Length: 216
Ligand code: SF4
Image (cartoon, rainbow, N blue to C red; front, side, top):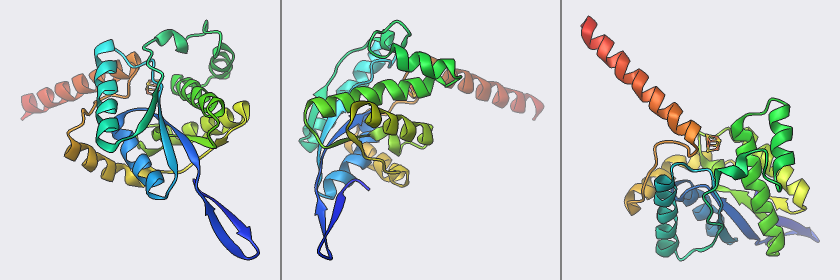
């Protein structure tokens, strides 16, 4: 639950929070933003997705984000870097986290979530906000439990509260809003590996259709 509730002599009060929301893309951001702002929380967006490949794709997603920022009068902090090196072992800031994850057999996605959420937690702390969260929590395509774990861990490391909420029931609603607004909708997660995987899946489907036609 993102809004703290306190019991004062038997009466419950909601405490609205100032939350920094990591924004993985405009489409995923829609439902979590709508939900938290609708409950009275103040939400600042945080764009930090440096491993989206290729650069053209990164720019399309960034531009969709700023389109949404204008349409909804959002406040967004852009950490606008396109630099896949952040996800490699030689980056000084996150090398320990990424090395630790990969050493214990963690996946690239786990490292990716960790880097993005630690950055967000650090920014929330730096800017004096109450807590942080991420739009990754809405996507049925992400490893939800790993996102949650990365958020809890980032909160521990940087000493700022992580707001966990399962936003996935709002995925369809977010998709419908995105279509109404005409936002750019990507068809793969973001990194070069996810793009290759999506292309391989498409190729497999094409071949399966061709084989089915040949049999028919
Ligand atoms: S598939 Fe998505 S979550 Fe996983 S590493 Fe690539 S960009 Fe990050």
